[in-house]
Image 1 (spheres, rainbow, N blue to C red):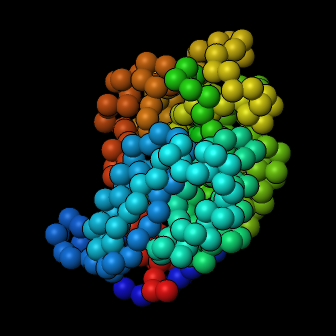
Image 2: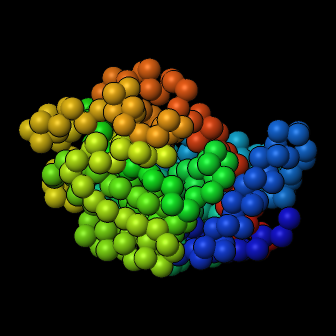
Length: 327
Ligand code: CP
């Protein structure tokens, strides 16, 4: 398998043309088929990827680690609290050094107004591809797996009504990177996206402008509402998920008055009944069960969350196989 995009950074899908994303999806499907058929796919034999994590992860870390092993390579997991970064070493120096030891640098850094800048700094100085494993703004690995899952389940993406819906949760103040990535990506595939959230949970203005532009260029639509029912009504796909009020409130306090005033933003069977009969429920996971969503919905017949999570493996492998290569 030729790394068609060798050396290309994977920081946001906005930097990737649609034809390139389509190629990643094709390769993901091929790698999924080969994985399930137990075929050898050692396209990255003796290649090393460094996986730097500033935060916790289940899906992202393990899909990357298992993925590169299945491609014949090796992952070095790096808890950044044990790196010299914790003593102030810069992203620049880290990127130069790790580039000289291996073939890719992947990183999760979700700190508000820091994460994306850190990744961009590393990308500027790295001589290998830098992969975003989620930052304060983007989660392209998740976005790609979501798109793969939607295509698998619905076949056609044009004119699908997709509700990206804020939901109540108390576990931690979550990044905006998942709804932001979906808001920018799905209109590029002709979907009719309704972004619904209570006041105080806005995505940045530039995101809304760009999402509308992406919709206009690709035959989709993008609207924002404070009425969650509008997003559920006649939807083909609903993605109710919590995100933090980062754009209007930089405090990392988890529970505040605005959050508590919006406990009713929960995905229930009653809300699902507003959607089409064959609606699908998606969530990047982990879900805050009982708060964001009722168990009967996430465990119910409309839910495709495990397929969505499984596809994280195949899409991660496609990104690595297409961007990593010989020195
Ligand atoms: N969806 C997602 O990124 O999961 P993790 O936080 O477990 O990696």
